[in-house]
Length: 240
Figure 1: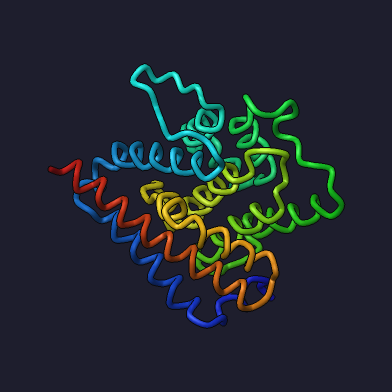
Figure 2: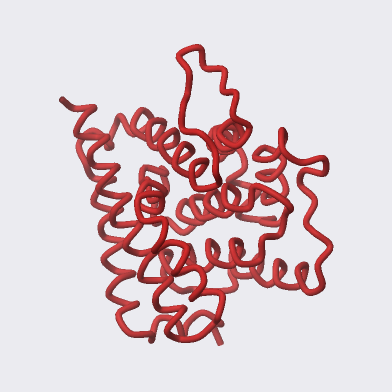
């Protein structure tokens, strides 16, 4: 039995998942993204990195020189730039990909980058998550994205930079499930603008109750929809 299938039966989840998937798909059909998607994806990547860094207490300021002093933002930008190369590893060896993401995110923050914390039960939970990513579930992509994102934030497998890593893993899951194969969406902007709701939804997810899980999944689907609108604004600006 698919371990995530029951989540689709939670109130409002199936409709929210469909709406999120359709919203992101529509952005890929924007006339600019039919051929010029590499340019809009690059802008989306930078916006995602800045928002993700801010959520972890970092700066959003990228100097004209390009030399970023803030270690959190520098790490988030390194992660964003590397997603394309990490993607193949994510599909076949997610834990190896997570270690690589953490090395990039925490290079200026941690003496042991890429090494998970020594916490009882952590490796088992990560193994279960890796199994889901590599084919252990057939639920729609937005649902798996929400689970990967929430599980990594809840587990906090590393000493630092867990938020940047979790949000990057969510982007990789969006790519691997076909929800956002070109990584055009920017749900991180929604997360930053609604930080209190983000934190509250994560607490709910961590409880594992039906209500908590429902709240988290609905919030993440709303973030995907909002991220699609952000992507559309990027494409519209590129066509102006």
